[in-house]
Image (tube, rainbow over all chains, first blue to last red; front, side, top):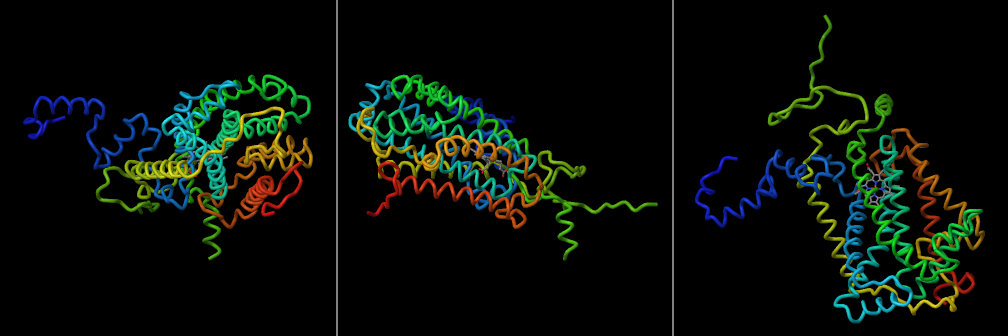
Length: 261
Length: 173
Ligand code: HEM
């Protein structure tokens, strides 16, 4: 890249920082032109899940209502606050409840941490369902997006699973009995029901074994799976040609309409 | 000799450094909106995503200061509350379970999940895509909304209208 006059006069210190900056962001500051805007996206690991260009239609707020992005935001915030909570939480039937009390009293802003995690979790179930409704009511699951809809159903089930396993962790009356009721529903399935319930609980009833199983599912297995399927979900959006668009509708349909006029 | 049609499908923008090479029929990426309908993800999409993320974070912080997450007494296996309720999003199922454990707890949720997965393989006709409440899709949209509303009603009944032994109660009494 040709140095301009201004860089010649720069002090050694400035040049050092300039070099460091350039080593991280190869294509300069905020890109002004189309080429820069393209580079900004595909040279950045975190941005390159986006296509370089998107249709105006997909940006209209009243098309998606940002519901998928809201669900994604909630999940990122849940990951962040969840990992933070892990520093204080102890998955033991004798310790867990006391740790919840500590979060209220002795941990600085512990109540904010727990409240954000809790409300974000409730909101995530709600917004994922709304997002699904948006996709349905705009016919966005039709070919070629059939499989991304199926991935979506898996994401919904994982979201419910995360919420449900997290519910037990405070080890209060609410948690204990909600999970007792919830897992007894699984037991009603013929043949596999009872073994399934015992597998989830690690025992006949909710206790220490259930707590550790729910904990591992909640902090490792389910979030890990959710990230994998979320990556596939986003990848498929690009491979399916961006978000659904009215121009995809069958041409003969348009022709018929034209003939009617 | 046959006339060759040279009219441009999309009018040429003089600043454009590329041209339209051919038209293909298919469902591969970017066959759809005209190039003029496309904008750069940076900044158009990314700024919007950032604004949504920050709004969500701000709302959560406000909610966290205003409302405490519930915490009841220490779990006690010998003192079941009456009624014991599942988390709100499963209350619809719990309500169904109260009529029939097998049908409500196994058959209905199982069928709902299978039906959800099959939706895009049953309804494949490309009409009404990308349009809210497209008129041609009234049957599909109506069915979906009916299920959604039914689920909401069951959840609300489970939340507010069920008391001891899952008997019917009214919340304002
Ligand atoms: C963890 C849950 C989920 C997350 C974080 C998520 C995220 C997203 C995002 C960010 C988009 C881009 C468009 C938008 O914002 O609306 C999207 C699109 C899509 N989602 Fe999801 N999603 C989730 C669950 C679901 C579910 C439950 C379904 C359906 C059963 C689904 C089906 C789809 C489909 C078909 C598209 C493409 C829509 C179009 O082309 O217009 N997703 N998702």
